[in-house]
Picture (tube, rainbow, N blue to C red):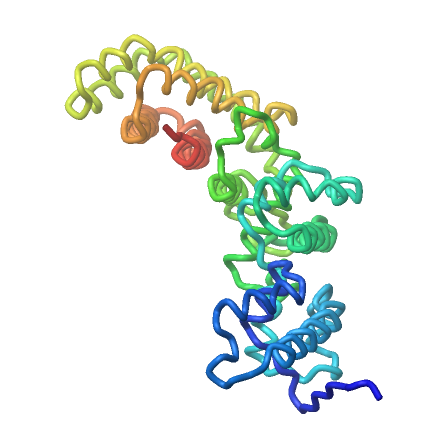
Length: 358
């Protein structure tokens, strides 16, 4: 007669440590080995076969619950697994957790079954187990399909439909946004950017350059760029004629705070930096130019600054000075130009700050 292990309980028991191992893609045997190394069950004198049986039982339970986690509203409604509210929140949050290194690899890729088959390369590169990479990829694809055409803000929609925290929802919102607008993030020169860098950049674009800027209501999407604003940015071309005035104001501000060498470099190259910033603004109404925003910032501003030995503090001082100089110059002239410049520079300043690594 074969031995049969039977566990009987009312509420479904979830061991956070074992659940975390399941989430990270450990097999049951790997989980048992890991727990033994940590001395799991040693204080109670639990034999190895009992630990293995307990872990396997947990793994079976999590595999059954996983079907409901694909649509967390079903987890709320089902009666098969009696879970305390705090435990239900924990397993949902953990299930939809995403590693930044995996998210960075997924950015810019088509969410197809073909790419899913190639996740072993992602697993090898990121040192994240293949099973976990597949879970994270499937979650991204599931959330993308659920919210890509949903009105309102991505972060709120993801929170409401998948019952995850605001910070985690923001990560998925970033991935969905960059995928919807097809921003270029995969080129070799952009590989130094972390997911955290791109999260900050994309979030700023969603706030300042989409239709949700100064608008509220379900009819406004933050996956839809404010086309009127992007077209109006062409009006900033008039600032090219005010280069000397802007340069004078910027130099007045920066001369007391920059070393002589840095100040002379700025004085000699101001025109190229200034024209690059205006050119980028005037071309953003074109889809191709918008998608290449991060590439253009690298090519036209970041690379020249690096070559000329700028540090991050100098970059931030320059951006602050040039932003304020234009606002000061236009305050008594053209209020519309002033507003366009301010809204444009809100994003450019944040992006350049996050992207400028030395």
